[in-house]
Length: 246
Image (cartoon, rainbow, N blue to C red; front, side, top):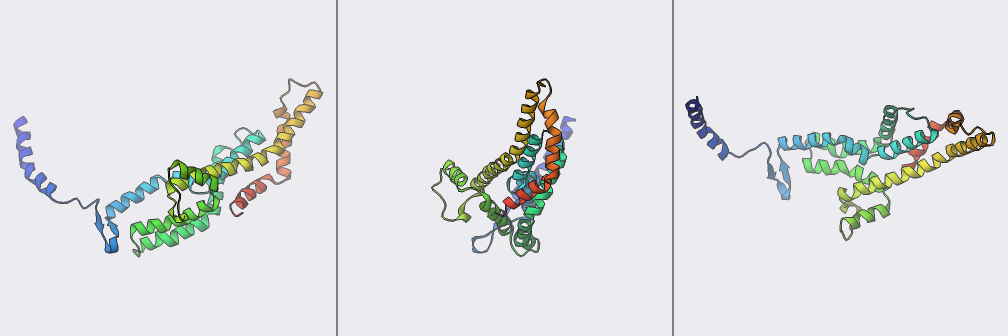
């Protein structure tokens, strides 16, 4: 048996050696006109599949999703309704609200980057750059200058001449930090009315000597009633949406 495997190995050596002499064309990069670089189809597909695998991270860090889901989570905590609405409902609401807000950005990215690339009007690198440009513009319109300066200093950079020179490695964390700050500011304003109700109910219960009765149990119906009377969901979603256009 050992002799048989040795014979098979010797028979395959010429073909293996011949294959090694031929260049691998699946993952190659060729120089194009005017210093441009052209990637092979297989390499382009690999890049696209990598981007698709990173789609959840892109959704959370480059869109309005972070601000919306944080505000909704704070709202649920302020109302004291525990797991109502459920996480799935909040994520779904945040997702489709983000889709409503980001639709113009998605359209610009498709028309400027993806569509020309699919029509073979531009190469992969140009299509990718043009497709990311609308997201860069959106993030730059929402990011705080202080956060941008902080991450620029952390990157040990002396600064950037124009906004187009800011790399995504600096812009992305600055944008997410700014979104968290804005979300907590909105959440604080939402939390105040519910906190007042909790304080009033707790004071009334203590004055009546009902210290063993949970104030949360009594205040919950009043908070729900207040939220429904003022059409709270419309106000919250409208405020979050309007914050991206201010």
